[in-house]
Image (cartoon, one colour):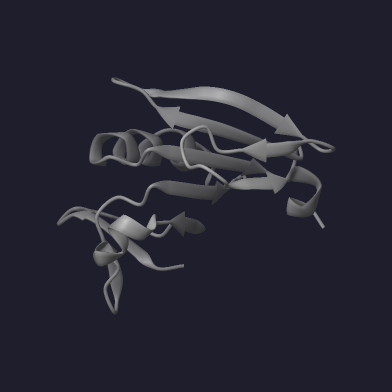
Length: 116
């Protein structure tokens, strides 16, 4: 993972980040300076509260457009998109389905493949 620097005091290391072509300039040699378009976090017992609370709030505040939460225990993928004041759950995908991005055209993933 690469550091995502949202401010001097808000630095995170998402499991996966996606930055669209027109925003590639935010990728530096050592970190990403600004909000990725999409952030994906893999939940674990030790990180779930932080991923669902602190990171969710900060990602919204600094302009992440879409947030995906992979839950290995439940074997689901929750897709959230940024609204005016909070992230809204678009859908919770389970095995046997294909998740698609509500914002970023062409991004999709077969949920089964996440748990192979």
